[in-house]
Length: 176
Image (tube, rainbow, N blue to C red; front, top):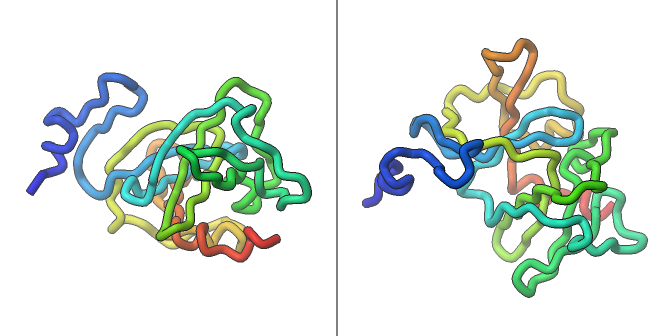
């Protein structure tokens, strides 16, 4: 059996991207990121198929598609939808696509893959799921896609919210 420390090469450090350094191996490994409204979210690493940064011109706009969608992306020969995660969660602030690179997180369940465009990916971190609390001060739209949240001790009134990948992929919002 491979332990977490074996998987991380012993030290748990990422020498290629220092901003993605992993500090401890307690809890579940999660990817932390921000949406346009500067709210911080996380996804369990085991639920992520791929994380890429791509040029906006690689996203092909789709006429008459849902406003949640930025367009489609060819990911290794498979066409997948690219959504503005903030807009999907009900935020009014749209993702700025007028830049050289857009961070995208591809999530998958069975044969369904969706790419979630976000403002910024910050780090990988071990987070203790046992300390999740019920979400507070969120819209009903957003609450439907959250597993819970952590209150950040270092930042007053700031939360790190854990997304529910299955709820996102199975959402009826994609039909709108």
